[in-house]
Amino acid sequence: QVHVVESGGGLVQAGGSLRLSCAASGSGFSINAMGWYRQAPGKQRELVADITSGGSTNYADSVKGRSTISRDNAKNTVALLVNSLKPEDTAVYYCNARLKFRGTMRISDYWGQGTQVTVSS
Image (cartoon, rainbow, N blue to C red; front, side, top):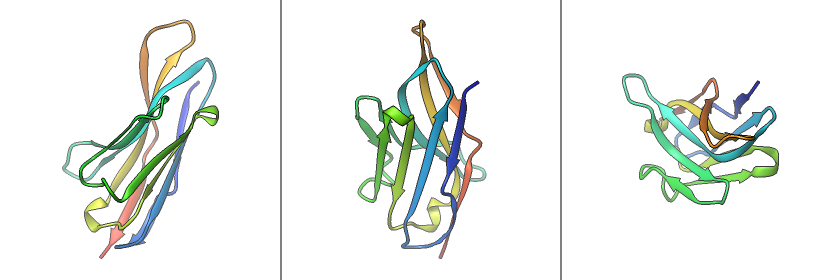
């Protein structure tokens, strides 16, 4: 019923930029927050950035100052722009949508399939 779809991953050179986009589709919900996580092989999944429906943002220390997360609540979308990419940014990036469903007070997390970001040196 709910689908979370990422786009924008790929291979980029160090120092370049990448824009990741995510859309949550379906019905009967409102956005509590959306964000991006990443996971490198052998590593824990970590938060990159997220943004609440009210516009409050959080960034991982590793991307602060070179990343911007933005949202369009009406379209249930979120985008992440990362500048000055580094090889250590290489990971699978997952979009997270934290949703509140109509008529409930429960918060449910939905995840995209992940998109590979590879930064070459």
